[in-house]
Length: 354
Image (cartoon, rainbow, N blue to C red; front, top):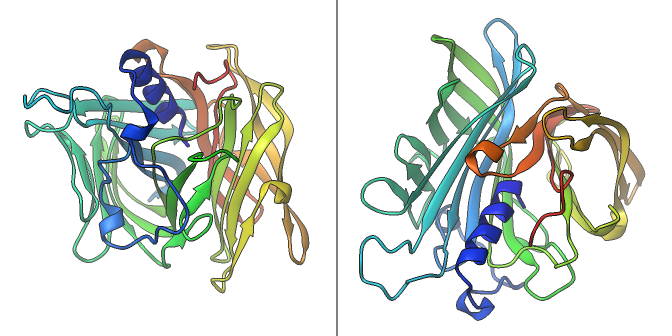
């Protein structure tokens, strides 16, 4: 679930009508296999490689960063033998959250697959659009390199824990309807090292990151208008994913997540186990949207209730992509009790068109 993903899918579907049976359906009981599932799944409608995290400069400044690559199968002209037929389309997005600037910096790439411009390899992670790239190296590290007019970074992500399968062994429901699900796994607690370039200056950075992988052909029910999602790296080695799908009255029409304890044991969280309670809202002067940027996440665990505060690194982490035909949503670095991570808030400007 990512704001830009749903926007791109709705745009494609508005232009190119396709039948649901043209794409595989996500269903339980399909075991994930690695390294193959690090790579692309071109038969499915869309998927993404999504990395979020916190960086620290040698001077001690703390920053948030995000880089995501998307692959979409439009389902149009697939019988056309022309190399120009858009059988697969790739998009990428990168952002930097710097409190010293006080607003989100971001950049984008897009291209149809082929012609040496863009690719999403099968068999292992290797996705690229021109000079942007995310891949898994032979030693198991993931590496990425992006360049924008405002910033650039070259980063390596070293796994420190095993793969964290979401939902039922990687089958993650997003609603009660058939196919309202994704194949979903995470790699939390990644050690980060590399360089960040801004203002013509190259700085060495370290940090902690989270990798999310999802692929699907259908996401949400028609009644969904947006979601709140968070992925948190906890200081004790634990990791948490929690999300809620909102309806037109901002009620939760579905919720879920997973909590992995420091000892590796996992608690699966269903719709009755998660509540997001807004504490403070921030209104964007650019777009007029009001976001619950500070929340309390309430979990029902076997040992009892646990409450986690979600507080933003700074308020204005809104992505206003209207100038480039992209959506408007909030996605930013947050602190929590004994940890840090990312929070995404979509559908607060207007209901998502699904």
